Length: 270
Ligand SMILES: [Mn+2]
Image (cartoon, rainbow, N blue to C red; front, side, top):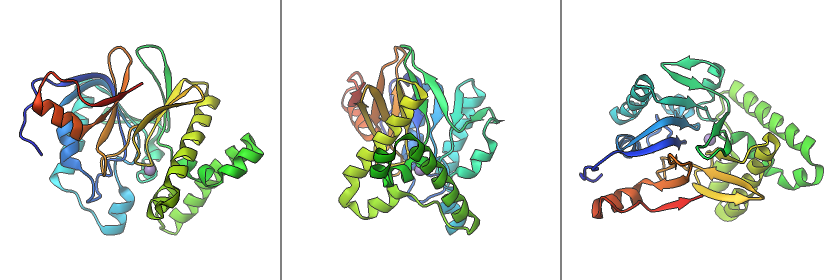
């Protein structure tokens, strides 16, 4: 990590991060902490897989100081008036049992609707329930909406049964990453499934995570934002005070702040 001090905190209206996988040794917690200490926001969304409870169960509790510092930073924000909304994912699905509750000032929800400063409404969800839809995307295309809803329920029950046998969540994303041939097709199908869901919800766009692939794109008039992860790419989605959404790649932002404090960070804008 660089020793450069930021001249000012980067101020945003909202910040979305996901897939930090705290408790997993591959988590880039010190990098994430550096990010958190450099930004301010009114609303912070934690879009799932924040804690890797499956990994902790499988390999025993690993909880380095840097992972703890991330949690402390988030709780301190909640205490100091930042709205913090936590939408659990599949690696921290045990937290879904607390949906509707507020713990230490952190609201736990299954999904949320975020209203941007410019009035756009975004569905915020982790996205793991779409693994099965993506897997069966050709069937879904043929059979339509009822098949679609049925598959999401099937995915839920398959993973409940796996859980009962103490098997980790089965993710098509992870499976395909190991067999990289069809990754691009997988990502396209995943995007399509989420865009479909956003349309059903009657919103302008969505924010998700899960597949560790940060992106802002528009598909059939729906804005698709994936905030990426803090295991590989170290990315966050941020909203400015005027409602502009950007993807921050923290290593790029760090570089540009090092060379010139006034240069805008590298970004993708929607
Ligand atoms: Mn996930």
